Structure formats: structure tokens, C-alpha cells
Length: 327
Image (tube, rainbow, N blue to C red; front, side, top):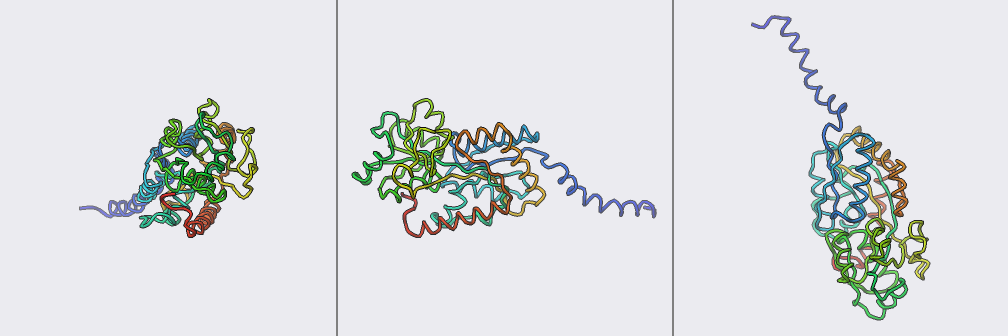
């Protein structure tokens, strides 16, 4: 029979045992590799940015951040995958404009609402895109491309990283502002889209600079214009669409990290601090700026407000009918 001293000792031990997992979790995070899901195929700008930041997080904090590409449905498969993951900080999503701000307004019957299914960590960077064509293209500047498109509605095709991706949206806006009609060919990521552009199976693409900078430098692609209001340092000889005659045109891609809703606040803060430290390292900052991206690293609240505002903007654009799954 258990004596009084044994009984007391057992009772005192219960609260400690119950509390121990929470204490250890807080002290040990991350105690295993963190999974970073990218909603597009390897080789594109979104994937490249995710990998350089993940590497910096690993080097800066000693973490293991493993990038996983989940493609399909304009990024919706990735958002669904991460939204259903445990809210423990061990699964992050590389969030960007399409899946987070645009898809809810162009895809029917989405399984998750990205603005409520995730808790924001931080906005990593924002960057302009670039209009590119194959080197043997007849177009040497964006004015020629637009003039041809106006004279030949529906004859030019452009590839994108998928429906609702930054490359798709930037081209849609170009169609709207320049009053042209071109045909959208969506792919499962920028990589496959660029392969077909290189093979001249499509005529042009508006894509992220990191995904094509090497090809531009290697003369594999010809840049016609950047989508920022002004020229950028990494492509100083390439004019902007705005200065080429369409001053109302501007389009940028943005990237951030989010986690499943309900992730503990202390875990989110740990992830945020490490992410901000990573993007502010000289190597990553130099690489981002060298590729035309602007490092940000804001608070979760600021990132949430940013996404909400961008979603409202695209909701209004979607109402006009100029963006859908076939344009």
C-alpha cells in the first residue's frame, strides 16, 4: 500500500508532468526541421526567393528549413495543404499576391479563405517584374509589342506561372492599361512557362526578375520593359512601361511568410525575428536588391493590413470582368 509520503510525491509530480511538454516546446522551438511550402514549381522567382531566405535562416539561426514545392490550381493546392497542417510553426507558406489576394475573387468554391486561414509572419520583399521575349523575337521594345497586339487582337500569347500569379496579373494589367487583347497560357510555375518562351511556343512573358536575370545576362531572353514606374538599378538600360508611353501602368510582386491560423504568438514572433534577421543579412539584402526586390520585414499586423488592402483592390478589379481564369 502507498504511504502518505509516496502519495504526496505523486500528486506534486502531476502538474509538473502536465506542464513539461509546453515548457519544453517553448524552449526547444524549433526542435525539428521547418517545412516551407512554395506554391509554384522550382526554378521560378518565388521559389528562388524562398530558397535564399531559407538558407539564410539556416545559417543565421542554425535551423533546418526545407523548401517543398506544391503546384497546381494557381497556388490553391499549396494554401490548402498548409492551412490543414498543425498550427505549431513547423509548416510555413511562401505567400504571394495570387493565392492570398487574388484567387478568392476568381476561383469558385475555394476550400480556404487565405485571409482567415493563416496568421501572417512578415512581408519579405516587393519587386517589379520585367516583360521579356525570345532573342529572335521581332519586338525590340514594348511599344512594338503593344502596337502589334493592337493591330492583331488575340494573336499574341503569353505564359505565366499560373492563374492569379504575379506574372499573370501583371500581363492582365498591361492588357487593360494598353487596351490590347492577348491570350493567356497558364503553367504550373514560372520555370515551365519560361521553357516554352525560350522555345518560342509563346510570344512574351511578364515575369519576376530573379527568374530571368541570368537568362537576360546570357542573352537567352530580351527584356523590353520593367513594370515599376521608373527604371531599376539591376536593369538600368531597360525602360519602364510607364516611361514608354503608359504612365498609369505599374505592377509589383510581393512575397511573405504565413503559418496556419492559431499558431502560438511566441512561435510566430520567433519565426518573424529569424526571418527579418535573414533578409537583413548583407548577402541576402544585396541579392534581393540586386534582383530588383525591396526587402521589407514588417510586423504581422502590418503584413495582415497589407494583404487585406491588396485583396480589396483585386476584388474591385475582378468585378469588372477583366481578370478571369481564361485571360
